[in-house]
Image (spheres, rainbow, N blue to C red):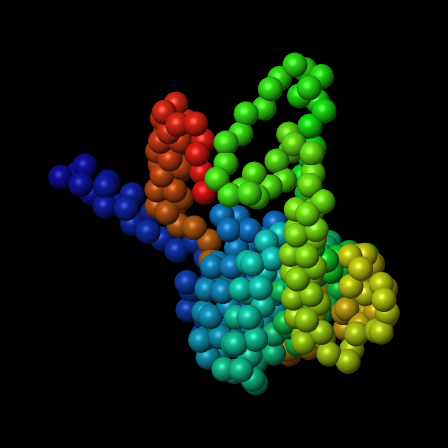
Amino acid sequence: MLTFAYLAVILWIIALPTIESDMVANKPHIAVIDVKGMIAEGESANAEVMIQGLRNAVKDKNTKGIVLNINSPGGSAVQAAYVYDEIRRQKQKRPDLPIYAVVGDICASGGYYIAAASDKIFVSPASIIGSIGAVMNSFGFAQALEKLGVERRTLAAGEHKAMLDPFAPLKPQEAEHMQTMLNQVHQQFINAVKQGRGDRLKQSPELFSGLVWSGEASIDMGLADGFGSVDSVAREVVGVDEKINFTPKERLLDRLAGRVGTAFAGVLAMVAKNISHELSF
């Protein structure tokens, strides 16, 4: 019987909420949503987590403002666009609820993509802001294999299926194709920033060149609106002292399940590697 009691206590602890937003917010507050680190699926700053936090904050009748607490160098264009679109959707649902972005050390690339959807962006003088561009990195080892006496064998169906193979010379046609794709993604980024910032943006050819600026300079460029921290925005802009973090975090049970799943997936990957020749789509 005692064993079952211990088990019940353990299960209760595992099921305990690990986010402040699970608590009842019974007085006026600002809702803080963290955007920290690399923006990517599987990372703490992923679209699913941020969107859930945003929706929970908007639903709370005591939320008087939302602050996106950003410290991110960027990441996935897709994940950033998901969050950007959701911010704008929630602003339409509650136009009376201000959504601000507060930048710590850095708000670049995908981080700025998200920030651009907010009503105002507050920075520190030394923050790093911008990097409005798109990039794709790779390496070329075509000559290295020949020098090592290694023969590369690749079978592919589809003329460009092995495109950007680092062990083959770069084909001009394929490089042009990828550049066109990057230009399209870059233009999507530019359109989002223009839509979010409007006529606050300085008319400068450098604005969308991928350059970054200090927080102080970003205000002059129209990329930010003023200096501020999460605390100062809460007190002086929104007019409340209470802050509640609505960023969802994994519960212990989910974390344990994820680790078990990852370990199992690793075993399957090892087995698959031993029986296949890496045929993939």
